[in-house]
Length: 317
Image (cartoon, rainbow, N blue to C red; front, side, top):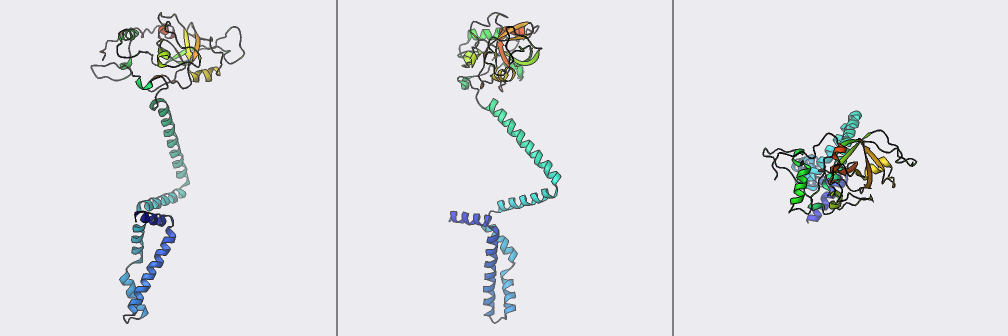
């Protein structure tokens, strides 16, 4: 019975005009039957019909009651409101155009933002054992929150690494930072025996510990990652690894990029590798930089800013 009732209601919703005609025929049939019954009680035809209409009541009310019983009132009300709204919009084409454009822009913006957030924040980063990666956080007695709670000096990183008995390994990164760099002009043009450097241009760089790529299980698609013996002496290892987007857009995906020079300030950094396309870093949310170099190169990357070795006077927890 329940399925039969549902099918009947769907038929009333989809074929409303036909059902209304059938309903009117049925009501008219009941009216005629009542009129004949009145005639059998010695009433003339006109009086019998009048009495039948009085006994039966309003056709309109009976029709509405039958509609509410047989259909889906909420859906029908929604469709009526929708038809009314469309008629109003049709009368005001300028308002309709503005409303449609606004809705389209809002939906498109929300979709784009969700796709970006889903790609860089909701999905796990494509590294080995991504579910086991944690981020060390500094504790402030004042319960202060912000970027500074994730800031540690290089000396603290070395201390934690040497005395670590909890984690399988520790890696360290700087915050992404804008750095002016001069790139070779022959990167995508005819090759020459001597690189000609272009004017400085803005890039986004990040300094990391030597075990950054190896401990994350990230293997460059070209070249190599940083070696464990690199990064021990300040300024001794001027090497960089490019991100895939930067390699593609700035160097045209040049397969002979290895060994090219990127000049930062007065120091020549050699390209030793290109990170995989899916690697988006380890930020929160992840942020793909243009290139990575070692933390030990901080004096060359950011001269006169020795923030790397400055101790932090905060509680650690």
